[in-house]
Length: 204
Image (cartoon, rainbow, N blue to C red; front, side, top):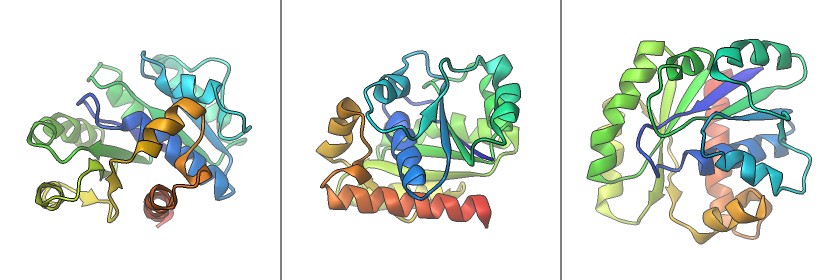
């Protein structure tokens, strides 16, 4: 079983949006996917509880950070992928979660504030020695998006497709869907491309 941790210490970066959509896309790709919500806000679990489809899966209760590795080990035989959402902060246990991951995926909005704040997340993933990649999220069609990609590329891999600012990402948060399950073809293409990119890293 592969494990992806979605991490960003800046609030509003789009962690939960990325987590749920990656999980749905991977499920549609035939993988047995398990999600953990380690964010006290519980947005990923709230989305899942409003979902009609059986996949991706969640446990009856999310593991505590201390029990994360043991829970992952127990789930290893039943699932192909675990997607873990984390809080917009740097609790002491975050390094434990990152250390259990095969990949850390870091969503970043193309704004000066977000680019300044991403240094703390980069430091955390480097300390945990976990492979990582950036995904630009909530991107406008503007020069600042290209500039942000160039800045991030100095620190690590950047997904070759951006997650644009689209209403469907917000709407599916309320309906319990992934955008790949809606009629928004552009959003679906973005997430499918992100998942293909992530899958290539995990199995490359």
